[in-house]
Image (cartoon, rainbow, N blue to C red; front, side, top):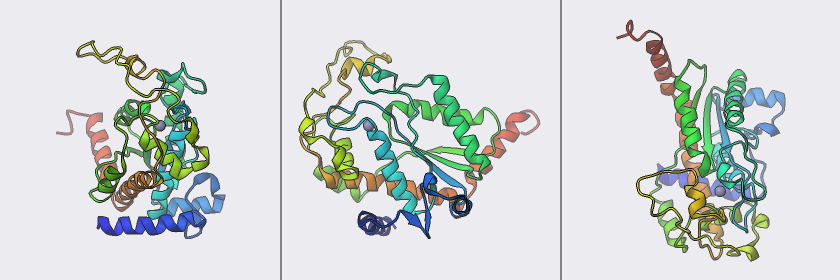
Length: 295
Ligand SMILES: [Zn+2]
């Protein structure tokens, strides 16, 4: 099964790179490219599934663009929607990034705005018939915010569901990914991210600027035992770079984007094929409204 998906992915990737329009049955998957009549068809074709790839605008070492996470999340979401049709939400870059406010170019919105923006986006998608929402997070700093957002869906009855994509292992692709990796430290703006951008938009990677600043941990709070602090990231990586990438590897970038795409496509297919998540939400809401009555 996985082999077939992977093979299909690579064929599709070749087609995409050859400059074919990114659409299924003549209907683009990117919401901003749809006409209104096409949007109506897209809702039907997608089974009501919409993927919101969420990025951020922040420093990515010295070699990558501020919107790196946006490019990465969108590349795999669009590739996934081409394998299994879903609507892909327009570029979205509202997330948690307070820890990079000391770096030029960071756009850090307030907690209230972050929350309201995402909640109202989901409500608007639902009002337009897209009631199965997948969030694909491209930015590590938003991880807890997005998990909490999903948990909070249970606070009150909703007429839509929100599922956060969580990638896992891929028995085939992981072997080649591991064989291509050379960096010993690889985190924010490191080898994987630099390679992904080099695959997605090589013109935006300033290869000559790789390594201009250190991406090694400064360990300035390493002696603090058993504690988490918001300043912990800054204590380790004040340059907002965690890595020691020497050169980007386009094939590595292709594999990483493809791996996410294959798994997002599987999640889209699952949500299209059944209503288990909705059914369990509704059962839960009903019981929560009267816990004593519903035993
Ligand atoms: Zn990033």
